[in-house]
Length: 318
Image 1 (cartoon, rainbow, N blue to C red):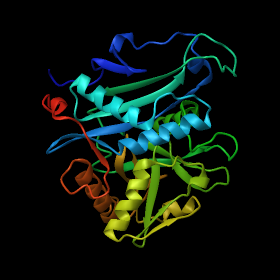
Image 2: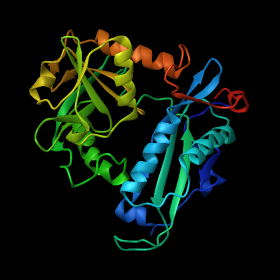
Image 3: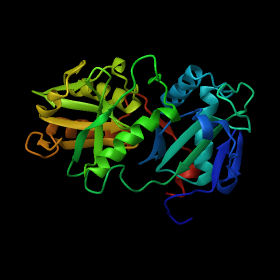
Image 4: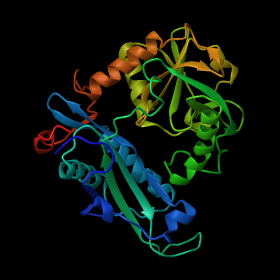
């Protein structure tokens, strides 16, 4: 089958493989009106021994956590969802791709509280060849701004849940950044301290130490972020999780975003303040190189992060 981006053949829907065109919901679905969905973003990477999904079980555990917070009864166990992910890759003959598991209230029931609305789970995969940020922002580094939009305060939206409705806030920040000629936005928390990007976690470097905001700053408890923390420990790079003010961004020697979609992307300027020499820095580059070496199987998976895809799927080479 020829390599292509975009739609693939099959989507997993509550235990059945359905055709891409048949994975539809009604216009009155609860999720369309009230944002009642939680989701994950995952990647499968091509390795020398076949495909491998990066931190599959950790993603599915977080999907369960998100569903629990939002009281979405998820009938599939973590293990069943992991197997369903592998099955979806095999059904689509994919190895290197992006994956989107999503749990949502569907049906045709209106009202904010809809305990009888059906809850359905989908696993979708597609080949995503383009970079998350604009062309060139990966190699040369991103130019970003601080958004005028803030992350939600504690006890408003639970930011430890990866919920669809939470990303309306992120859309405003991203659109503002793009409209003003930047690649991405950095968001502050309700107290004016640094939180994260519109859809990514953030690290900065100052005098050889990595800094990142704590989960109490309204950030997502990112799995790629956790991977960076582990890799930094492996490389002997000191890390501090702490609240820090906006102006510390401008004093950073280097910075980078991290997340499943963006992977690890250097930042070279913030609000037009140049960071370091205006090029991707050595610490971020070292972390990035180690991350991709593990994800693509070029070095030992000492942390058990890779879930292999059966050779039957790898044979297609897509």
